[in-house]
Image (cartoon, rainbow, N blue to C red):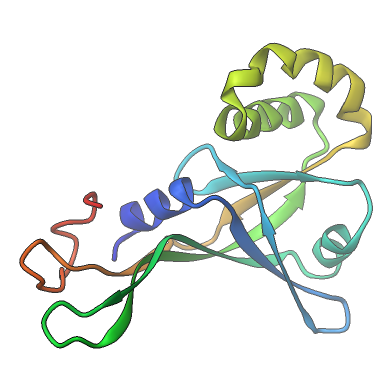
Length: 167
């Protein structure tokens, strides 16, 4: 599936797993609450110190993966056990945001995505927490890709991008 499908998956997924590489070369993957601002830029927030920050210092290459739908099902035509799903993957570079204006803008986007009904508390929270909050920007280095398995109403597996926005 194309990048617009993949970006839609990232937008609808409740979290995105971000995979990092530790200084010793071992993998580290963690589900995070990412917010996207355009076709190549995602943000998340975290503590000023910790595993994610150590990984970024050692190797800033990351891989994002998300699933916005995963439903076990019986294949409508052949009775096989299967999953209907929508998934996406992307590669990028992570960097710590040091500019306070960009940090606040990124935190606003995150809050708008996950807690839009509480924006009235945003400014007070920023005043209280900004100095102890890290913001990380992920810039994709190539277009994301997606995959899906879905069946239409007649039980036929959907192919290509013709039905990308359905379901």
